Image (cartoon, rainbow, N blue to C red; front, side):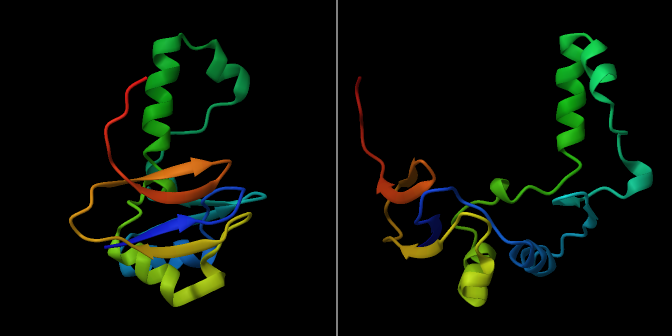
Amino acid sequence: MKIVINTCFGGYNLSHEAIMLYCKLKNITIWLEQDGFWEYWIIPPEARVAHKPHDEFYALPLAQRVAYNQVYSQQTFNYCDIDRDDPVLVQVVEQLGETAWGDFSNLKVVEVPDDVTWHIVDYDGKEHVAENHRVWD
């Protein structure tokens, strides 16, 4: 099984090109907006929950703020939600090479045996794949 990890300090991050190719290959329709950084909307502008200004948001009771955040966050595509062993993600990283790397990242595809139950270990953004085992504290 192939898994995408970040091999440098900084953190896992995909480039704009990688996100665009991933969405194309997965047939995910997105609407782009750029205001200093890219936003990848999966809901067209006319159907989105409107952005609340800071003071209006914090005037809401906590339960309403939580509900608003849940609905609002479901309107955008977030590459962090992609499973690291997603075959299309692996394809994108292998196909684009360094062009797939986002800011402060150095992506690598590692292979582990298919029968291994694994997880990603992160230390200040630098990652490795580890086999699951039991731990007691």
